[in-house]
Image (cartoon, rainbow, N blue to C red; front, side, top):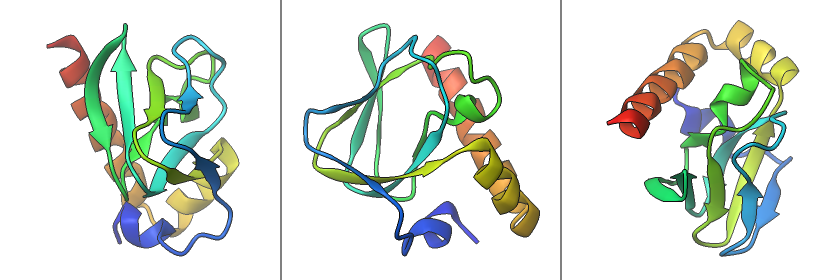
Length: 116
């Protein structure tokens, strides 16, 4: 089961308009997001390093270290995002263990991109 399949019909989502700030680097981190519709740009130290589309995730480190976001996210287009807090993450991992591996793969790839 992919992240796209897990959340494509999710009813609880948040809507952001194109250009709207979703998270800011350094702000307290409480949830990660799954992109249900649209595209989100990710910035680290004001440099664009990735654009995330449907089925992609952002702010995944919030599930491990809720102290602060390490990147800024801005809606590139109008978008719908599904918020995932730690409790929901644990439930998803319990039902779909592969979900945790998918999140860790994204995390590892992002860390490589940010420091290259």
